[in-house]
Length: 139
Length: 458
Image (cartoon, rainbow over all chains, first blue to last red; front, side, top):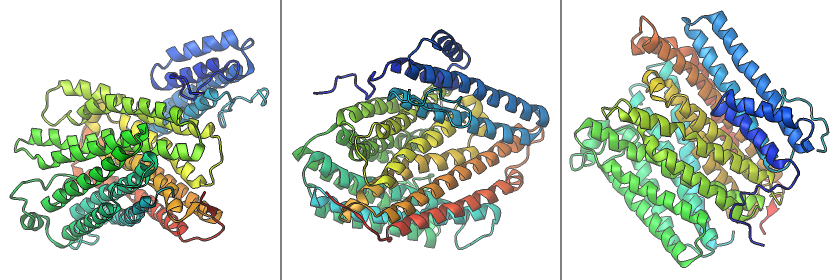
């Protein structure tokens, strides 16, 4: 059977797949385009659906919400610490700060891209190191 | 291999790898010259080593693109190449012209080379990346036209797929925009303005189409995902590339004497340029995740995934890092640009060529995939080169930030050469990362000569 015109290889094969994709998209938008605002939407979605959504969506909502919080903590507190300890007028503060920010931010984005692909394919995925445990790995 | 004439790709790939080795050796020489200023002086001055390093990069990538296209178009068009003899003749012309040019750079003072090669007829030399003497530039045009004629005729007599069309648009664009290398107005602003029509519209325009089509081709072959799905992704990537990349040229027009509105246009549109690379990464990983079969050539799949990630980081993230006009005001032409250039070229274009070579070479040698032993070695080379490039980029970024501070932000700015001395630590670290890259390249070449049980061609 020919594929439909809007088929990008993303079909709602599993319940909650669209919500899972939305959660991952908001996670990435929070990092790349609308920091804060996208997280507020994501947090709202998590609050609303954390108990009622299908397992797939629930996992992605949980992963993205918690990783956004931990990621935000990693970005802002450690950047703040580097700034506080080094001071604005020391060149090495900026060397360390910009490298740290770029590396941690890019890593979070890359993980988010991979998680988005997993959501698009109806699979769960735990963010390495900082992602909360998967409740039911079979979901 | 499906069509006998695809075999013409093999010498192109071998030449590409040979020139790649040359590029890396000159990169190491250059890296040492940053810290030991007199190294190999006067035999190979810094400006000559830099010119050889960048020109070899361009030429080996072009050899790779040509080889990849000669391999891909017959298979996509489902017909033999229009003229394999023409393809082989052009290979030798291009190789000899390229080799003579490099010999010219290394043996004759640049001004003498210009005088010897008729630069007074049409003054095209002396501009970064377009340093080639007039006969070489004319040779490139002849080779490109013959190459495009050969492929276009092949396509006209065969099937016309979307992936092949995107590749051909990219290749025709490459040839058309190279013509601006002959336009060298006396007005320096105009000179720079149109110089970018070759340099920028190649790497942030038409080359991305070549990259996208190569990636799509290899992903179809290795994952078994429906062509229609892959083609739709490709359309989106091509659209995003052209929308962001064409006006994104404006990020080169901030400080060259063009009107101020370019600071807005350049900033906004080049801020969008990471999007197609983002799309490519999601595309590659998504297709591999949805694969319908396990292709025996795992190394090619690794290169495909790697090019997605590394081009996003190098071209996307490191490009965005210094593309907004208020940031670029401080970072313009510093080691931050070098950091971006290294990772973007490796991630986007070196890796996509290595991916195509990785996929095509075993087939050209009569097997579906190399032996497991050979692939393990190739994957080691992937990680060695890629991690080394990440470190090269990080060290150059650190050097660049320090340079910006010392030279441009500080209340007591230092002269250029004094600032250079202060960032030598990072140049040394970059050099050692470069040595690791060379080791990776040696491992890569070794992988071609390792035996073992091979996967038979089907």
